[in-house]
Length: 104
Image 1 (tube, rainbow, N blue to C red):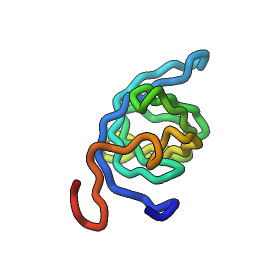
Image 2 (cartoon, helix red, strand yellow):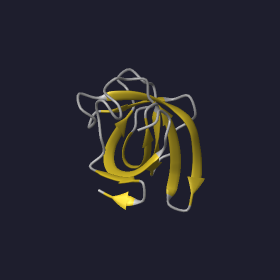
Image 3 (cartoon, rainbow, N blue to C red):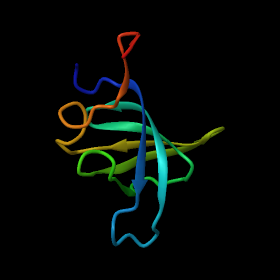
């Protein structure tokens, strides 16, 4: 799988504010796309750019930085940047991915 290639996928992830964050939040996010250094989430909450989020449901937990947040008709599309060996594809791998036009 080429580095940086965006892969369509589907998973439900819990996203929370890291401990010690002034404005706490918790939401369930739908992971729509994943790549080696990030992903695209659908959330119910607006999460400001440059915020740090924590995804405890990914292995032992993975932190990410919000790159962008745009409102759409279903909520908010949140692009994240992830710098962790526990992320895709070496660590976490979504249960549902669409590779080369085929579902798996």
